[in-house]
Image (cartoon, rainbow, N blue to C red; front, side, top):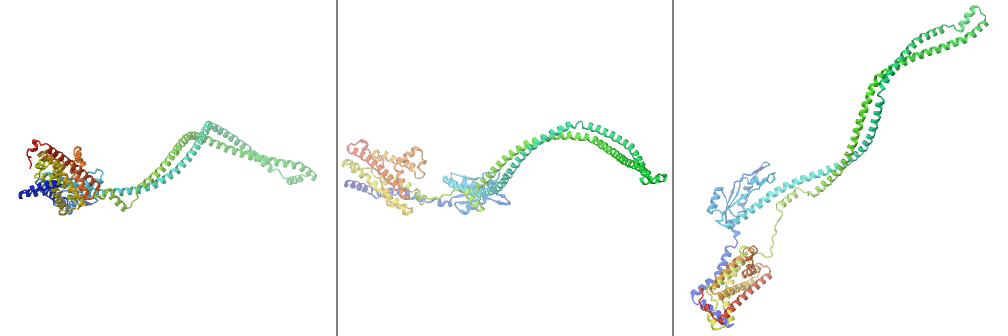
Length: 631
């Protein structure tokens, strides 16, 4: 242990032997402090000073008129951007903006063209056109300015999309509400149609049954009328003959009446002229007949007189009957004549009725068939309308019954359906704090690398005189390790107090920084001892490799596959991860794992150094005696 202390003290006396040597040591000691401190200070909060980034804003939007109201979205966005002041916006014309972009006056140009509002509002039209925000950048001014411009225009695009989407969604939801009301009415109407269809189907079934019966009756009627038509075909001729016969009878009866009537009248007159019994008695008394003779005559004449009276009565009745017969036969003749005149029309009507009944039977048959089809169709209509009513009712249930306020809320959700709730198990306080682990680790390597520009990797005299490789190894490592730890203490002070970054576990982080610097010192020492000036150069190459693969700026998963392997193998990657866990209050287990990995590198590097110095204490080569190109 005393020999190690002696070697360290000897090296420190050499490094501070003169004012210039001391100044060189101090200058190299503060290299990592300057590197880490200035870089982190300069990049502490770049997004907090974006209001100083100059950008041109060109608005030629002509606006859009809808429902008598003109809206100019380009002007609204321009006013909002200028009011927010997130960037140093300059509202200019297109030519001035282009000239300023080329000259570097503006880092980028955002343009809203003349059709911006019209295209933005076309979302409600049948042929919508996507609105465009034109972004013009010039990487010759600043590449990252283009990235900032992308972020700004994306924010503008998202805001406009949310606003227009909310308006369109509200219009859509209002239309859906109107459709729902119509569906409710349609469902009610469909229910009524279903009820009517059921009634119609029932009536159609009854009609089908009735028309079937009517078809049977119509067939029977057609058959009967056909038979009647066949039977009445000779009726006109027969009735004509009947009329002729009746006329002959009427004429004969008229002649009979003409003959009978005068005779009857003569007989009646004769009977009227017959003397009565009293007149006869008187005449007989005047004739001188005796009373008894008169009585005997009267006895003979009285019965005859009664018979003549009775015969006259019969003759008058017969004459009246003949007259009545003559009148009746005349009427019969007239009726038969009229019958004969009407029977042809009757026969023709019967024939037409027969033909019509056949047509009727055919029509009733068609009606029966059609009514059966109608019954079937109305049955299908009944089932279909019932299904339609149920479907419309289900459809109205699937469409939310929202109030105007609820539709407004839903429109906002459609336009912006997801909100991000940010939570962090561990968080950096600023952009600079986020980059600090990477640049602290890099500063640790740079500090050790710079120290070995003036620190001797080992004492050749000690190798020759002491021949104790372990003591020489630890002594050679202890000097840069102690100086590196001092550098890390200074860097920690700058990060924690000068820049004001939060450190969750300061004591553990100090210990980890000390381990990191000591490990890097061992690695650069091994390279220098093993390979001399070539090893010093390899230390620079190794720093560059770790600068790329440490994953300090972007996630290491974005690296190509070979570089991801180096990320897992090289020590700075684990140094960055360990500092992150301790600085931000992350997973302590990961910090311990990183410390263990650095410990393995530390032990391996010291082992390589020990092996090289052990060889030197046993055998010396010409290369060992050749002076190094460095120091």
